[in-house]
Image (cartoon, rainbow, N blue to C red):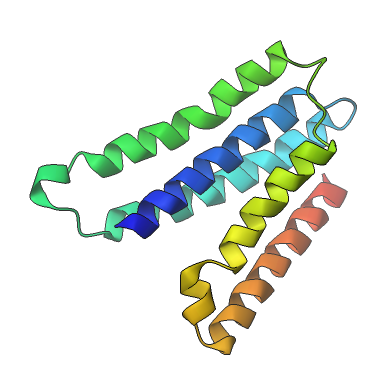
Length: 142
């Protein structure tokens, strides 16, 4: 159960940065918007499928709905905040890059990944690289 809450927190936190980044985008807004629509769609499908297959205790059956609702609100709220702080937030700043890097580090070096077989770790790393490559291709295309 803890893993699903860590996943939810990471995805919501990540979505906040996506909303902020989109809000402060300049000329690249249209390209970034198309890429983020796809990104958020697949991220939502992944999170939703994880929430759907998790066996919830009978007294916590409302939890996946609450978590899904939190995900659905995180990017629009962050977008609104980003529009409000558009002149002071720098998405390429050292602080923003460190926070994003820490989230990637948490994925690759979590206790589950540390105990996983090398094949699982390499597969996860490969999928992460494939996703980054596809997003770069989509960004180039859009």
